[in-house]
Amino acid sequence: MLTGPIRNDIDKLWEKFWTGGITNPLTVIEQISYLMFARMLDMQEEAEERKASRTGKPCVRLFPETKEGQLLRWKNFKNLSGKELHKHLKNEVYPYFSKLGQVADIDETEENTPTKALGHISDYMEDADLEIKNESVLVAALEMVDSLPLNQSDVKGDIYEYLLSKLTTAGINGQFRTPRHIIDAMIEIIDPQPWDTICDPSCGTAGFLARTMEYLNRQHTSPEAVWEDEEGNKHYPGDKLENYREHISDDMFWGFDFDTTMLRVSSMNMMLHGVNGSNVLYQDTLNKSIRENFPKQEENFFDVVLANPPFKGSLDETNTNPELLSMVKTKKTELLFVAHILRSLKLGGRAAVIVPDGVLFGSSKAHQQLRQEMIENNQLEGIISLPSGVFKPYAGVSTAILFFTKGGSTERVWFYDLQADGYSLDDKRAPLKGDNSNDLPDAIAKWKAYRQLVLDNATVEQVNEQFGTKTEKAFVVDKTDITSNKYDLSINRYKEVVYEEEVYEDPKVILGKLMTLENDIMADLKELEGML
Image 1 (tube, one colour):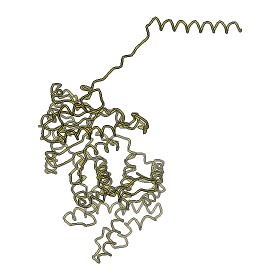
Image 2: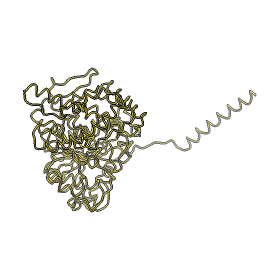
Image 3: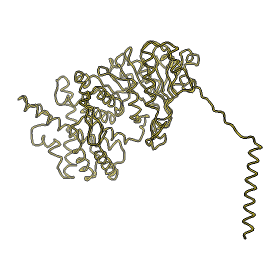
């Protein structure tokens, strides 16, 4: 959680960008990202200098030791005047980012070089451009970035999350930001472990991957290592993850996207969450080129997949991965993404995926084919039906979360009818308080209770005792019921609604009451007339 002053500083800067003519929130985030990157390069250089001083070994530098080279460092240019600063960033500092990307490619075989520590982000900074024309806005942005506590990994992650929360527009291919409380619920249900390999095949801003890192920190922090800031917010350094640091930094996280702006933002997001070597890479996941570019990752590779793939992306069938078309012959991206996720998981790998409701009940051959594959050849374990306003203001589409494990076959499916997520379901999405305002904690608790029954090899009777009543929010449906309904997975197909009988008075009684009221009114009117 961020402290109030930091949040206020970001809000003020956001307002300055707006008044300075930059109104696209993604552009604002991108411009702040460039400045954060410039400052973090200098922080990396200072760390290398301290290391060289301590060990007596030569310092492996990011910046040339010439006067011009040292002026590329944050600490040396941050005090320039507005006009000089604008010219220096545009003509010297940002062009140097592209050189860094080329150096990083050369250094790929080297161990622990400063450019390697920057991960893939240097690749996506190659086309960085300064779009802040207003000098006072630029100086304000520099001062704000300079004041941020970027040396605290958990706080800097929160800073970037807060910036990303200001994104309110959907992309042309149907991308939009997944609400963080929905992501957190999905992660808690999947329960990723520090030895897993985790992927988001349409990563966007890397919300799923970054929040997974936060989840791991919370789960693997000893009680004495937890600390509180001045506002009482708890911070979890993840001290019990030390044995897994190399895996977490280099091999654990994988994200694919074909929007370079998103790759830049997501790489920065992961870097600010303490994961420098995350594999956030340029790739259209559904394109056949994935078989050449990432043959290992395309099939039987990941332990966990967390995703909210685009629902309405335009698709060129001739370039689609033929392996996916052999599983499900369609142009619909939401179906092809689920097929890809099944293919990319290891045997026993698990996934949580947000899909539009059409995937659950669509009557086309492709829809039924995919659902049959999930039920007959994999374990579709749970479905949480989400209310239709969850993705406002981006879209009002009804969605659900699928939880499944690759391999085996399905015996029964656990359903949960989520009617409230703690926020209003209109465009404002204002936080709600009080009873029945948030079903997510109950959904997670019910899921854990159900999973425990499964792990304990509970009998059908024991499962039905807790989850057999289809009038409840959480219930199970047997596979035979699903197959007999053409693999229909919509919750309304199986949920039973109890209607309360409304008791009305006899019409003659109601008419009598109306006539009495009418007589009273007429009497009052006559009394009023007598006063005139």
